[in-house]
Amino acid sequence: MKLTLEFGGGLELLCDSVKIHHVSVEPQDGEQKLTMKHLLSWVRTNLIKERPEMFMKGDSVRPGVLVLVNDCDWELSGQLDTSLEDKDVVVFISTLHGG
Amino acid sequence: MEGETAKPAKGRVCTICNQRRAALKRPKTLEQICRECFYAVFEQEIHGVIVENQLFKPGERVAIGASGGKDSTVLAYVLSELNRRHNYGLDLFLLSVDEGITGYRDDSLETVKRNEIQYGLPLKVVSYKELYGWTMDEIVKLIGLKNNCTFCGVFRRQALDRGAALLKVDKLVTGHNADDIAETVLLNILRGDIARLSRCTSITTGEDGPIPRCKPFKYTYEKEIFTYAYFKRLDYFSTECIYSPNAYRGFAREFIKDLERIRPRAILDIIKSGEDFRISTSTKMPEQGNCERCGYISSQKWCKACVLLEGLNRGLPKLGIGRSRGVNNEPGKNTKQAKGVESIQSKQCGNLDF
Image (cartoon, rainbow over all chains, first blue to last red; front, side, top):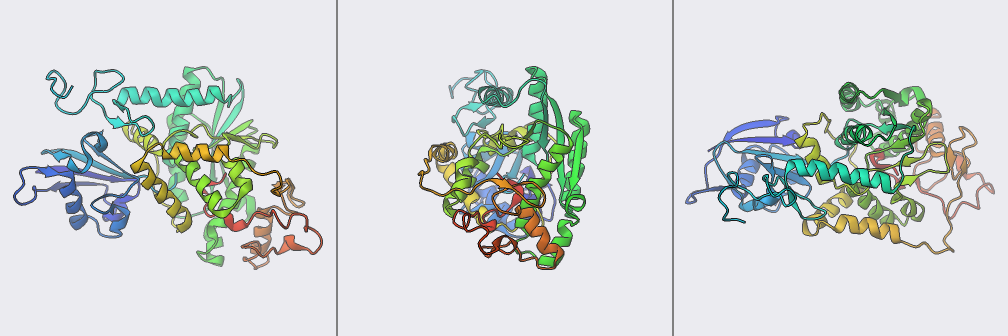
């Protein structure tokens, strides 16, 4: 499944300062669908190079990180249970530092 | 609702227009609304705050404290939009402070320079180097990474006032949002800083001084500011200051975000708590006077910027840091203020000076 992931608000610094990543992620073994929960752990393993605690807390994003799936607040699609489809665009923006 | 077929592919429908797909959940009201309705309510709410609190009068010159970050960028955008739409009759300016931090402020100033062109607002930049003779890079070279935020915060506050005076504006607006204010309320409680606690929730401060400051985003959630900036593809800068570890404020910030996740209203409730505090009349408050050296408002003989500067120039950068009161501590001179004195350490990072 091809996805576009975008990191902003300083989160890009955790993944080699690259803002936009085109990635291919498959559902977890034995699952039909790819959920945000699985995507987050995939991102943590494969993209985050330093300070993962800036990105995640427990199995979700750290409070203060905004998540948009296809330009839609993930709070509307079920947060961790959001299921993703091919060519979806997922955006992570940290709101945790000054402005 | 869920079973309706005529709706676009997936997702819920906006609870305001009942037509378009909802794009976000408002933290304040938990309403699920679409992009267009979000723009409308976001701007309308800020207009409401401006009108209700009579923040501006027609014909006023107003400087927007612009860091290039998302808050001030959204503020500049929305304010120029509302000024046109509702005929506020304001002359708006962008005012930026160049602290002299290579790799941080020079980049964010480029953003402000683009905003100058994008929004057609004249820009004034004042620098620490011209005002104080020192850049933050030079200060950090001398004092290291401890207490540097104190210097920067104290200097920035004055720099904004001095820049505003140069622009001859009637008011200065800053992009402090609801999350920032809730965080500051908590910090002031944690520090027992009663003087700041009582003024940090005011939408306008310094009305007795030459240039009042106000915060049109006092009730605006950070989440919505980010979402607005993102949806509108506004050009803002988002890198953390290279010198700012700022652990204490960081904890408070995280705590607020944790609360917000459980109960989004918590942010407004903390602001309300701050507003409703009643300070007992027997509490000694610092007396406001003027700095004997530069004339800036100060509760001490010298203002903090002058004390810090004196330390830097004499090669004693610890002067004015912490509870020991160097220059200001001439015996017999300020016994009166000794009790209610504000600790210089009470202001960690100047990004959020109130």
